[in-house]
Image (cartoon, rainbow, N blue to C red; front, side, top):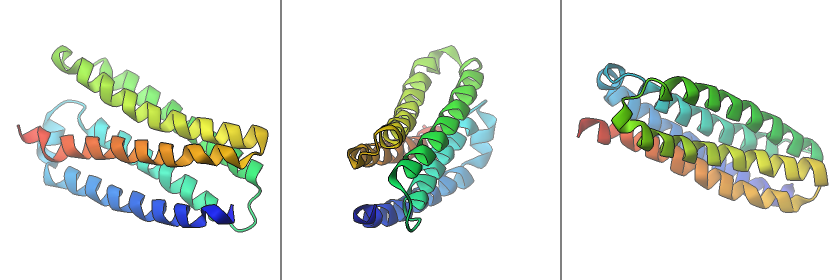
Length: 161
């Protein structure tokens, strides 16, 4: 785990920066976001995904953490987040204007892919105890940043088009 500490520290800082961008997006256009049905849920999804990234990176920095225990923690945290996102998505997709449903489903798919990659990383590490599963974490983090960034873009820029 020591070899991964710089990665965890870096991703913790990057996730915090993305969360700041997200909050700016929400605060700049809050009135407009609240006017458009369930658009605030996209901000919530992005925040939840970034929070998962913070949790995963923070848990990786615990001194003396056993690899399998860490994998189990990542697996459980990511599974809880996935269940939360799926419930949220089911709720808002039922209320989205039909002309936007396909775009919202694509966004939800990217968000889910990020979290599923965290789930897989945690599962591989917890079950096998093999650090090779940690190699899925950079993919999961990059997907989560892409998901959060694209949601922030919609909330900051696209909402005004």
